[in-house]
Image (cartoon, rainbow over all chains, first blue to last red; front, side, top):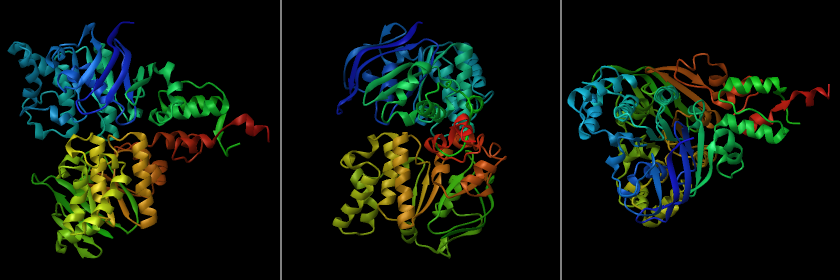
Amino acid sequence: MENVISFKNFYFAYSKSGLVLKDINLNIKKGSFTVVIGPSGAGKTTLCKAITAIVPFYMGGSYAGEVQVLGESTKGKRVSDLALKVGLMLEDYESQLVSLTAGEEVAFSLQNHGFPPEETQERVQKALAEVGLPGRESYQLDELSGGQRQRLLLATIMAVHPEIIVLDEPVSAMDPEGAEELYALLAKIHQDFGTTIIVVEHRVEFVLPYMTDIIAVKEGQIVAAGTCEDVVEKIYTEPGLQVLLPELWQVKCSLQARYGEHLSLWRKLSEAADELRVKGFKGGEEA
Amino acid sequence: MIEAKDINFAYRRGVPVLKDIECTIKDGEFVALLGHNGSGKTTLSRLFMALDHPRSGQILIDGKDIVNLEPADLADKIGYVFQNPDLQILADTVFDEVAYGPRAKKLTEANVKTQVEAALAAMGLSSLAGGYPRVLSFGQKRRLGVAAALALNPRTLILDEITNGQDAAEQTRMMEYLKAINEERGVTIILITHDMGIVRRYAKRTLVLTDGELVFDGTPQDLFEGGEHLEAWGLRRPVVSALGANFGVSAATVDELCAHLVKGDECDEDD
């Protein structure tokens, strides 16, 4: 399968830090829904910033090796050179909103990239509708709730039709319903447009139904990367990473270890309950 | 003890945010305040800290109307950690940030040092004591907020979404620390969170707000094992509890669940 992002022997240090990323070799497949997990401070956010060329060309610091996005090295590229191909939503997403109204916010990047006014208007309208904010062009930003402002930011990203969307902990402040809605929306974008989605997430239960690949990062290095089927069991055996897996998969791995019987990679609670029942599990005291 | 007596509240647009809230939180309780975004959780907790005042009704702290308490007295009783950590960062180093409260209380510098160091250690921030607070990660800033509140040794801690942006290991360490000060020193904990797993593992009592009304007051077990209204309230059962319920197992953690799920034929052999 075609890779949209490749890291080759990539190292990075911020100007006053030690190495944050060490010898990263990594491919992210086109059309994948990739989830990045790892303890805090492992380098997950820096990895996202390297994909969007914010690292190293905006943050400074020193690096070695290279990152290729859609076949081109990010070396010497500015953030704006990549912005039409890669959209980024930071954890602190409020800091990315700059305008007075929702319509202006979505139009901002389009205008900066020189889209003609009619097309800008059309794209703004469409992007707002896609994120569930149809007709809100004239709304002031402070008339929108936190969750709506987050969807607005997603509209600004969608409006330029990027091939890759990178999100850093997009649901950390959301209630369960809001988190489910945002991921259902991302899954729809993923499916309808074939967009590659890369997301850093601690609350993995919300992304469980959709994720195709996992990257596990620890102390600046890649511990495991690949399809969920290929890497879950390896991640489960890594100290400190086990607890970052979805709880359903922790149950699967724990029961497999205990009973030596292979269990499926459940995506839903009902699938887990059904298979466990069929395989003869029931409630009781430990043998 | 915190008592809310028939509280009604609205911000300046006049839309009611809290409606006829009546509840008492006793000393030493571990309470989770739950509800969807915009349900009124943060607003209610702000009233407990006199950051806003009810339109009608009364908040009593240890039997005294909160409007008659001096801010300094209130700060001795209740520590508050904001949802947005940037709102409460004042100083230029992590140490000074946490020392701000103790110094304002005119503690000796030796005492300040002891309390600050203990609070930083509890939140895993000791190695960052000399650092500049604004460049910390989001998760570290949140822990800094908790450390600043801890350094004042309040009898009640109100913590708004402090586990956001923390990885599982840090979450567990923070929560175990709060559990310890709750059990050993009787510190009252009021936790606002969307993480149902944490609620199930740590809270002793849950209060659920929906559209400004208090719709549930009871134990986490009753909430998650009884509640047909959960979804309507914007809540979800923790995965482990929900899977366990399929097998008649009441579990709060993966380990508990797995210890109580046994292969049927092994039991059958004994029959």
